[in-house]
View 1 (spheres, rainbow, N blue to C red):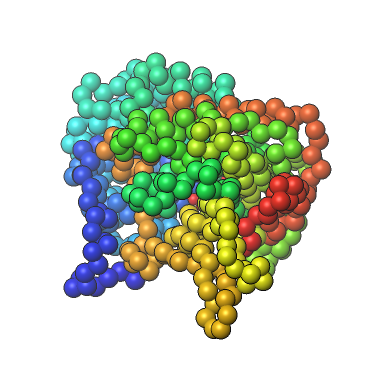
View 2 (tube, helix red, strand yellow):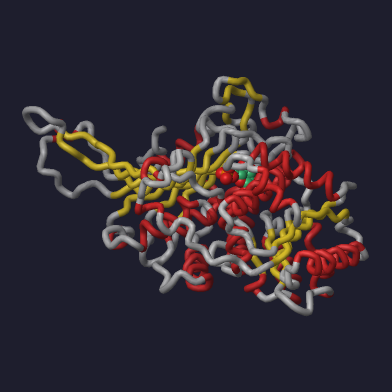
Length: 504
Ligand code: BG6
């Protein structure tokens, strides 16, 4: 519920204190795809709704399929009605839609860019967008090469050109390096915005606020006080019709290589000297470089079989449309990682991620060491667990600190209780979608929440090392029923260390 006009909530201040971006045109390659409809258009609408878009703004949707400007606008309007977080207001939509056109484009045809360039010039002249261009690549990595080359040749003589590139950025270290090199031939790193939408999530950014805006956490944020860390990226969804992509990617390339490793980096990084793109990314790269390649015993992979998710029966992965009946693609990964540096040496980071798990839940749990010498009888502390700081990335965004407290009554009996902070009840305003923040940042030229070339390469080099170990053994898939918390071997990974996954 949004607050009434006369209600004042000081915590709301600052939520919308943003610079207005310079006038520009956003070109979306892959405009007929799912991402454009489910995320990008609703994000643009949310920005328009809050009057955060440039004064003069245009969108060119580019895709292979045949369409007209009117047809494209109509599809986008439906997408906004279906997926936007704000109510549909005709005047907001009309203002956004008046600068929206469609360009049919065959990405493999190097002549096609010519017609786009002409369209861009017309749009610039009609909308007054000053030659500033933001090219959004919502296309597979294979389609990026030709487009980037063509764009480089036709860079606007006036105004800026920036590239936003969706994940996956390459398929392995070699392809990511090639793509980085190709882009670097014509674009500076400050013109390239590699998306990892987890960095646009409020709760992920709040991790930086939690750690570096408070004096009390940093002194204990290290191996002396932290026993271990658990990071979970659980989804109840399956592969949602993306079999051809997922068969190639698997959980390790879809989630581990990017979202998961970014969560590790943000949790483990040293305080940056300021919040500029280079300072923050320098610190994250250091963490990624310090990650020790886990041995085969420290990595578990899984694939879901038939089961029940939220009460409904769902097929196994191998039964999904378009999936090989004998597929060896993993839909689950758990691993024990070590960040080999002074702060974290010997402190395990247990991570797990998977599709068709019991519930959607992304959490970062900092498990602190036990109090060294509690002066209570052992029986008094039966209900007591070591302190855990739990960051709920999603859903129910917020955090919770588990602390020991005395149960009221005679005698000394202790129990773990929770101090909670929930975004929903504290700030009341609904949280922005990650893509809103990221699109706006790219328009403003701020790359702090985007992945730098060396970062993405470090992420791939760890993934390549893990995947290389997998080619030697044949996995016994499926090994977990849909709707559970993953394969038993993931529990064993913890039990061997005398620990267990956080209960749900
Ligand atoms: C995407 C993956 O990057 O992230 C999807 O390709 C996954 O497979 C999605 O479902 C999860 O994003 P979110 O924001 O819903 O956690």
